[in-house]
Length: 380
Ligand SMILES: Cc1ncc(COP(=O)(O)O)c(C=O)c1O
Image 1 (tube, helix red, strand yellow):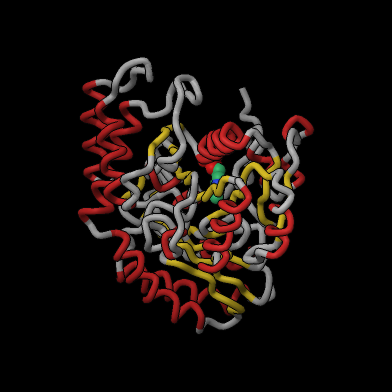
Image 2 (cartoon, rainbow, N blue to C red; image 1 turned 90 degrees about the vertical axis):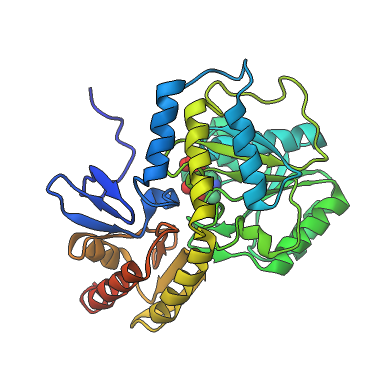
């Protein structure tokens, strides 16, 4: 049987990971400044992560949401503590797209409306409703276009306000930091303005923290640099460090009713064990602080590199915009220097998303490797 061929792939096959490195079958070591699409938060194969999942596997891997699950309670408690959002309620699912599907559904239940405001270059997932709020016509099938969606300019409030004044908008969905779009930071005024406008006009504010959350920005959620309380916050990626888990944080003012949402696999025992291990390590190893410290080490040197137009970054979510297309640099880093980095929908921008546990030594190795790659890839 052939695989359904939808992915363009790097020509490296990792078979093992440890900390900030992955290894192919010849034991060649690759420095991971991409974390497999921003997923690796606590580093590869962390011993506590392995122990928690292995212990749970020996106890009970799965039972459905038809029974109480103490691990979900523990996860919710630790997530409340870690994020400071103890008042919110947690719904568990399996991926980022599924988290956003559920957030849109809750918003539509609450408002009884369906029009969505999103932003240019947004990426919110590839499934049913949510792909319609993703700014990429190529990946939308006719069946996805079931509700009206408007794409507004990033960091601009005026047109959003005009649209919300019609009082027909269900929700505004916004990434804490735009990721795939090329790492675009949200201004504090923009986030606070969106909250005010949503409240004034009866729309829900959904913060998509699937890529920018779980400590990546140096805050637990990237939006927390602003003084806002979104109605809904979605997360996945770093939450399970590679184990499939996602979630929606739901404002206390929104009441659940039986059957409102559901998932067979969401919040399984094994997924919760992985999620708890991640939260333990973020706290015990001070990884949010480390993300801020490593950011400082990286940013100054990256900005000084030849050919760099702009560095857009918060914590360890870094967009390096070159003066020319960055594909040759990304390939050189991978195949000549053994460093994984990521692309974005902005051809000149590399995305750097190392584990939050990256060390000072690994940062200097990376800086040396990128520094020596640039002269050979410029205008290639
Ligand atoms: C901001 C954002 N939202 C949603 C998603 C979709 O997540 P998933 O691929 O887990 O469905 C992604 C994935 O890259 C993302 O970056």
